[in-house]
Image 1 (tube, rainbow, N blue to C red):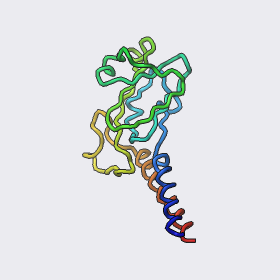
Image 2: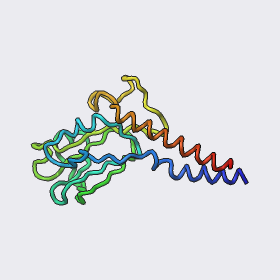
Image 3: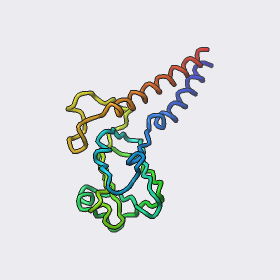
Image 4: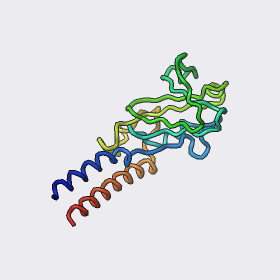
Length: 174
């Protein structure tokens, strides 16, 4: 009986574990996806992990979101076959680690108004904890390292997982 309860608990944890760890980052916070905002400074204070989501909020029709490569980011040019996101509430799941580049494709918003974002996505926080050593932080172009709020987010995630695990184990034993 106890082993079937343990199995059920482990299955539930396996299903919900990734969503517990995921964080939704509203790009630009309360400003949203707009012109004349320093998205590099905004991203610099955050740690993005596989499984997290970027949420682009903007008035529908005023902007778009285009995923580009590093060259497209520098030149503010999207590939001809790219499909812009246009809902005004676009959510992009960060499914793989590495550099990610996004631009606005409306008018001169990218070129003149600096409406573009580059981030570095780290492997899932469930597979490795970030080191406090500066040498392990993302490259200097992604920012000087984690801020207190980013480190707190990772610590809060871990604490939540531990609390849920202890709660499930307690339920199993009683």
